[in-house]
Image (tube, rainbow, N blue to C red):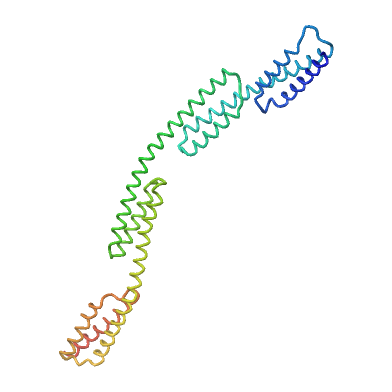
Length: 299
């Protein structure tokens, strides 16, 4: 019977040594309490020398564990106080997204921090829980206000889209281009309309911009052909002006024909900035020279 008791005590001493090794990395309070309870059941008034040696060894290990638990309790308290300070900073953060992530991390850190005394744990927990509840209240208010903001921004962007649609109904592409630039700047200044609507609204506005660029490109391409045709027509008038200048008969029929050349020039319209000034300078020089010769001829 004594041998069995000694074997049991040896087993409990070995278990105590294991707890002493891991006490800094885990919560061993319950296991430690059970171990001491089991040890007390092995005690008797008269013990053998071997039992006393084991009791002395067990008591030393218990003292070591108590000291480590005491030191760890101080460390846990400091860690939880640090978590509370970080929670205060998160509560004051302007970024709800970052603060929410931080608060989640702090909750996990609290779970891993361990335990001090029950009274101190309860005290610290109440403070941390209060900060956490304050943050959740702040977060809920933020998202409630955010819904109103999203609704307002959605309405503003819908108005911008309507203006873009109306602008695209015009034909003055210089004015439309200026209007589109104005609307783009206005769009940038309006905040997000929420993930349920933002992409849809942007695609609609972007479609109007693309329509403008497409229409303007088609218009410019058509104008290139028109300008080329007008330039050719004006070159023909220049050729006629050269003939009248070379002939210079200055009869009524010829003078009327030269006069009509200017009328025809205006009726043709602009031939584009690449041609108009050069062609006009050549044409106008010929006509002015004709009239100058006519004045000299009639003196």
